[in-house]
Length: 482
Image (tube, rainbow, N blue to C red):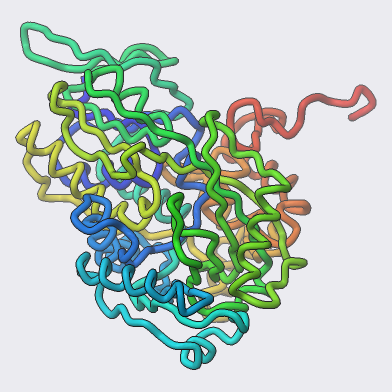
């Protein structure tokens, strides 16, 4: 019996876990995938939104601005890359200027600081590569970029360090409210047997409506909304200086162009509603749309520097609103559902809101020994030459470069594997260290990373996967092999 079971180890679930680890509670995070950050959190725009886009008075608007305000301290405490570079919403005609004025007013109602309209001359100084047709922009200095992988992993690691348990490769099939002589609790039927908890937090992303609808008469519906992206090499990373959006549409904030916190250039997403909650395939049509749309307001984008394309899913709730809180007709069941953009930005505030709700239900008391700090994987490139030499003398693995594109060492990969929760696959290593995220997209370093995983995990090389499940790299041995 757990006090709390969280379904889902995306950024919202892990943020909630970390905030709940402040309390004297027995908490378990259950995840169907092999690692944290395997759903929506792994494939998004990595943007910290300022908060002018959300409808005033909504929970989405409130948590967007709160999460933005909290992000800097959270990233400092958890050793996560974050850069407040500011954002621009651009328009191409005087007729569209009224949309910017509306966003400006919305932002002011949402208490977004520093918003202002910039004209063509100032915009050209801020962004030399804007097209000739682009005339005006809404400037939001509090916008920024963050690493979504590191943020999710950091939340999970800090939660684990403070006592939260994680169970991976475990599918929850059904949540059953149960009554006994000692009170109400929940039975979770999973692929690994039954689990029990007094409180369940539903942070299941595109599957959150399934669990909500199992326990509540008030049904909700979530649509997987696919967004496709092009990622360009670091040689293109300085093409723009801010996060740049077109005017928003009814399906989102539009196709953005932005530098990433790691120095790449990212373009996307599209917004296509689909039925398959696993439908993260890219299509030529959607990727062409990314190119065509971005080229309308940013000139000379070096598309030839594209190193990969990918797609992610947003959990679009029909009412386009976060659903966070105890379900009215099922006490003890706490929704954290409909977390689409600006979900990443809102994650710090979402975690606090969920933890406050759960602690109130359980009358939980805060721990005296909670540690809010987490130290990330050591990056030798941040050291002085003298310190790096000393590190190699003490730990020779830091002198072995495994990923040449990103200059990632064996020591960093070992560190990522040995952490809790640690990497168990190529993608797990990639998200924690960036080994495989460079120009060659793991074309050279994969075999060596596999060898390190095999050695550190104590499993045969044939069992190492790209991303868990059946995604094995080695599917058999040649009869002539030694």
